[in-house]
Length: 251
Ligand SMILES: [Fe+2]
Ligand SMILES: [Fe+2]
Image 1: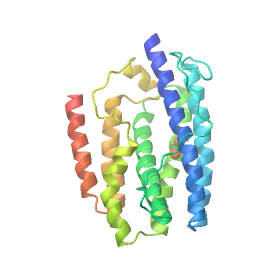
Image 2 (image 1 turned 180 degrees about the vertical axis):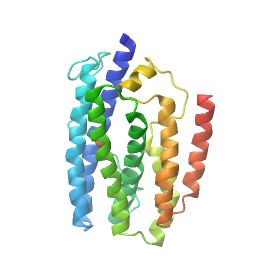
Image 3 (image 1 turned 135 degrees about the horizontal axis):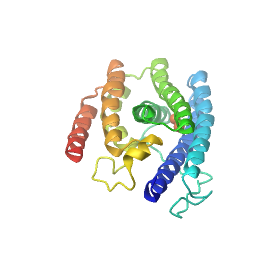
Image 4 (image 1 turned 60 degrees about the horizontal axis):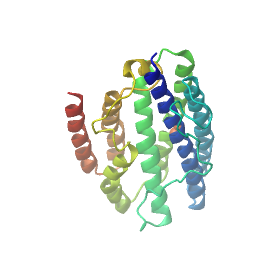
């Protein structure tokens, strides 16, 4: 493996560790909010368990990143990759929302949208991994992310949104989708390192990530939300636009 590929693998796994770290704190806050707003106890328990699982994902991702170089606190290119002790967990719901609606928004945005997106992207790359330790780690992460997305669906089944809430869920769904992807995913990118090699070590090429995201959202997320009465037309229109970008970028 060449140095550029090795450094990029270290950077990608370290980046993923950062996302998992932020997810742990988001689940911690969510568990507290679910509890404070009087939602089902079992949902609080799942969110609490999810925090623990995300912490294990951080450990797994950092361990893999370390294999490709760098040292604790430094990535392979010498940049600081220390994880913040208390990451800033942004508010995703509009500021005007009350406490209960804020929780509904966050559960849908985070569990149904983001965790479903994670699960489909990880699934898409899982079969190409030929490194035993990484494959094992990715399988663990995948099984957990699927559970995390189920927290969202279970929440919606346990506490069905009323007509007003269904209305704003449909209207804000494009924002939730846009908020879950890296800003540059559907833009031209300079790829460092050899993507085919990196795929064998658990990071899907950017074209594959774009495709898995669009397909997963169209085939899993939208039908799931439409089934409970959310108007998914605005979100479908956004996915059509992203898909057109994707086709252009990958041509
Ligand atoms: Fe995770
Ligand atoms: Fe997760």
